[in-house]
Length: 274
Image (cartoon, rainbow, N blue to C red; front, side, top):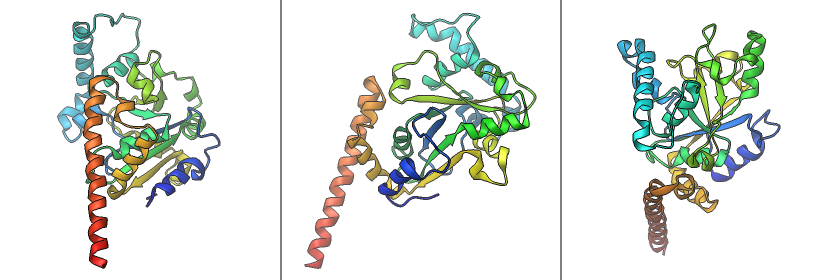
């Protein structure tokens, strides 16, 4: 599905997505990607893809990254420590926050926050907004494998019988996660894209997987960014601290340039007609 205007995507989000009885529930997650060509692949997957040797060692790489993170994290934050009882998913969430490659993929409970991430970067590329109603996936997986609903978040990684992808939520949230209304998808097969696993449950009818993709033309990105800013969805509101300040200044300059260029073109067009 490819949209051509702001009004069109608003209508899709608010009214037109089929089988979404309540768009405010946390069954429905949203993800924005600044490049329409990207798959739903976690950073760890992208890191090793394309090399048979690296792909064969992905679990080793993941374990090595986790060990390094746990062993050094206290140097930068003495308040946080890990004990033997903590499960891997909680550690992965912290690693994801600090840009370590993990098998997690970021989502948001807010369609508009996800839309921001579809348009805030790679302005020369079309963006994409993904919407996933996990109830379709859960229902089909439980039909195929009767024990699916009994597999909890901490058990997903070690599950061996079949591929699983599922949404998880942080038990202890940081400030950025709260601001971005964040959630994560996680899989027991880090070599497979999450969209591939979701689509496999119903290849004959993609609409029944609950996963939808909306393509956003690159020409609309800055307009959408400006409109989202008016809704208080911006770098300043989504990224706390100095990181948010730096991103916000860049964003402001981009939008100022875009607005001034538009006005300049409009004046030139008017004078030409006269």
